[in-house]
Figure 1 (cartoon, rainbow, N blue to C red):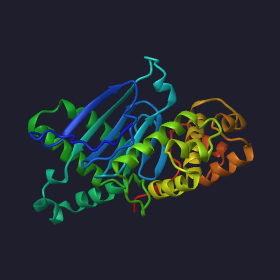
Figure 2 (tube, helix red, strand yellow; figure 1 turned 90 degrees about the vertical axis):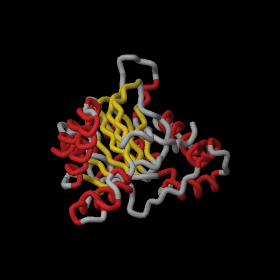
Figure 3 (tube, helix red, strand yellow; figure 1 turned 120 degrees about the vertical axis):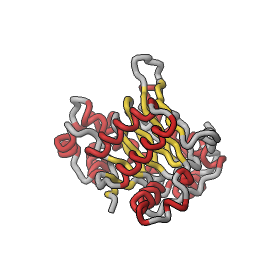
Figure 4 (tube, one colour; figure 1 turned 90 degrees about the horizontal axis):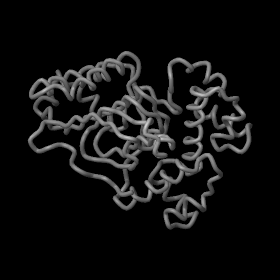
Length: 299
């Protein structure tokens, strides 16, 4: 798996919009120069935005800025060849010069300018904003010519006025990745997502990156803004959140299914990441779906 930094927009088009339908989403950790809006219409898995990790489900709507690494990794069952499992989404790519500096610098564009700045950390939209924005994104591919441009501008205006949104990547996160780094991180991501329910050693992860455990620990912390152990815990807790909301399983069974060796460690890690006990989480979000594991409200 290699780094991806490719042009997404035709030179003859103002922006690009695609209706995606595939067995699974692109499984490569990547970044690009364009702004990106993406809504999940079908499928579940784990979303990575910069140093942020949380599960996603249908309705997940995120706006990412230029050069912010991201990945929607479909759950393992989407890679097992079951044709009844499919993913679907709508993605929009555009450059900042779509609006132009002459407009963006004016008072009337203040909120749009603020939206674009915040997107450099990734923004997840929820509630009525998410529902209306998802509806507009689904309709956008059918629009033609300047109606399509107007549709995007109205969508950005809607998002810029919303308070139902959360910043994702940490305030101190910066993308220090190079192409060879992205390939390494892809290998680690793929390995963890395939084996997180098993015991994973630092030595095994380091071997994938062709590093000593000590060098890999420093490398991972530099590029992920967290330790490998914390990263692995986030993946496991995210999967536990999914099981709590989707399966009729007791907490002990969920703990072991998610890769934890002891129930006490699971309960501690779960509370540290979500601020809830597992049962309280299930009661709070049984109807509303995944709330995320480390949320940052937009101020």
